[in-house]
Figure 1 (cartoon, rainbow, N blue to C red):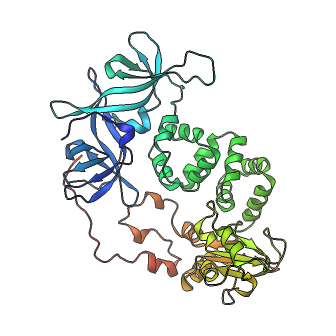
Figure 2: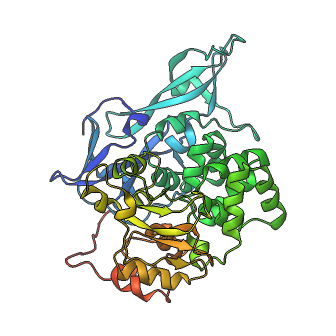
Figure 3: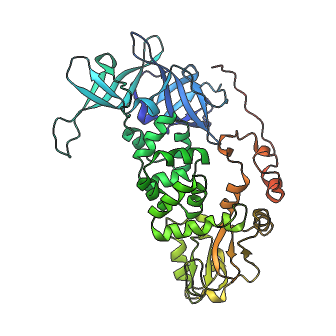
Length: 445
């Protein structure tokens, strides 16, 4: 194995390969165990494999670390990772800890950790990259950084002193919301709340939308009302409504009163519908335009970076007003349809005459059948007066069909994921994949 100093923060996201050059997964963390008179010893890595499952890779199964990659012997146990007593995750738990220099020169915060191979073949923590406490009262002063040997510092673990999450967040900066949510779910409960506190409102909103309801409520209950309302403002109205529905009626009303009026209005409208209906599943933020909108104008609207792909697949054409509930719904124009016509063509001439909207009280099972039967990405939802109130997208339906704990299922258990009353999509989603075989590893942890 190559013997070189490696900084743990730079290992996060590095690819893990087997001896044949096939990619196994990506590094998400490094596991160490503390020793009484020596520096912590590396015992392995937390590796994310396809399906967002995290597994344990023993350091004994690693033949090379460096050059932005890790090479293994190819013998990997694919059992889901569970942290054992005495094990410490460097990224999730060490970064941000406060240490004190043994020479009495002050305190510092751990920003990175270097691991190095010993002559005996073990990997251990050798140095810490730390930032000393600032000596100036200036808000622009951050304190200078230094390298410190493990033996030169002692860790502080004062109860009630929150661990800084800034360095951990810097490590997770490039993760997609779903991946960041998955990473936070792996953290200890207290650490997860600390990290949530330091996320921006928009970033936290994106992450909450990807989390199970239990963890969503746990984090929101931890936030002050003003902060919680700001985060809910940044969420999609349907996701915010689902989350508020899990809270006590008193807290839900308090948060709605603190939200931006237009956002709160959308959420209140969604809460009025039963959760297993089109109204309960829909989002209230589709692209809505008048009939004289040109193809060029519509394409510019669906090109917006902040627009979800499912909402950008079609635009809704209505009479004024153009905010739900709109004027009378006229029809939808699909993205592909717009690409087939000149830029100055009016959308009123391109309406899909075959697509019928569903009523807000239509059952979720019927909506899923319509989406599956006609290969749709979204379906419009109207009220008794044929006014557009929202659209149900395929991801809204999947969120409903999958059980609350679907994120914790193994990828080898697809047949257990969907509800029993959702046969139209169940047949497609739970069918076996031809040629797939389970991978077996021989290493034991």
